[in-house]
Length: 427
Image (cartoon, rainbow, N blue to C red; front, top):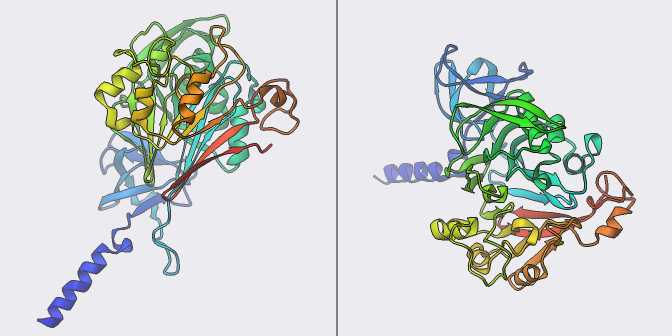
């Protein structure tokens, strides 16, 4: 009886050990040069769902003869051939089985605009890439230059999110597609008949293997016509799975939730701004885009019930809770109402802004800055834009008389700790 008890005890302990519950993963074999096809079923005749590229891994859910049943980082379930995949070796006996999860959220100084680059263990994500005044393109694109500087090894962006189609959020996007292999694009679907948004959609259509998601429909085809002088014609978009409230897996220990996604034809595209909460390990970061609470009012004013802030407070207050917030609408009085900020409960705030005025107002508004400072630490990308313009040592073009490239902000998540600091390095 004693022997039986000890046997059962050790089996139970083994079942609870990190190695016993460690997820199995597969990767393409060394023979694969392009990608392994991910199919809907364990057959070469099954529908193609996606591709597993060299350097990527997928979680093994189950296996059948000749096939692994796997789950990709974006949540797609499918089957890959065992002939073209290998299991990823487990950690050696001398290696730590449980590693702390580390992430970096870079708020890139793009002058008057927004661009947020997020990197984890096995994923990379970009939320917006636009500017009103820092409009270098090609090899001098400030967003591309920054990502190359901090991640010179990076070749793929797993997710690109456009919060809404305004110039200061989309203008630098097309070069991103030329510089990186983009896997998934998330866009509300709200059309803005501008050259910048037109070029953005054309870049999506030209990207091999990209999956486009919007808040309109799943697995349909829609046409968008542009009549601008710099970009025009009809663009045909093939929609993947529709954007929903269901969290999207990013990578190990990470996911994103689209708290606000709406393709309605609001009078101002700010009303379509996708609000994303990133769950990274045990910490949360909220990306508010240009989500508003109403017209310009003091922070103490309750948000309009039909605004993004008002709607989210009504429907999903608990979902707003976060440790860090990339502040809405560049620190404008149209956003960041006290009720909203208190529901978020962050202690780290990042404001991305610059010298270009919005309807004659240069952001951020001081009332918003002070309201945030009373709640935590505030970091800004516009600390000294005049000096930045003549800076001979900054990210991207130097001494170009444009803001941008100087006061980048990095939020770091190291295990259970979260902190923020400036990155003022040059490339």
